[in-house]
Length: 216
Image (cartoon, helix red, strand yellow):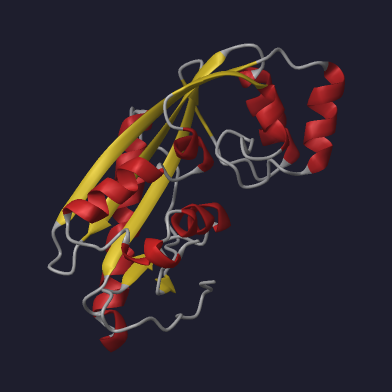
């Protein structure tokens, strides 16, 4: 399993860098049989710019993360020819971009907005090839939450699962019980839409399915 230090891989496979420290994104890549050679998370200011839309924010942040990781990788002999994958997920509810909740008050405000209504989740994926070509894809998923009871609201906040999550919830965890309807990609809501990520890499020559022969 990849960690912040590199994992050695056979020379026949091109190197790949995930520009994220998210365990969810790493697990999703591994689910697709893709094992990053390095994790190079980028520390970027995720505050929306004035009048910036949710789609624009997701695209801008994913590009920034990819560019920071690209510069680091190109200065390292072992990652000089690596593919770079980055992503950013943004939740939009009631016309408002919801934060990645870090304190309980932020999470509570997010849950109040999400309770009993539909919201949109956008993830922008950015792939940089070994020749520094940039490919991007924006994915949208619509999600509807049930109306949360007081007990559900309070217990979810007490769980702490919301911490660091876009929109203050994790669909792959306890909050999955709140989802009444989902239209689009489930993995997009988790943080990395697998179909689109694999398609981008495959289209740029990365051997996405090479490890599948031994998957069983």
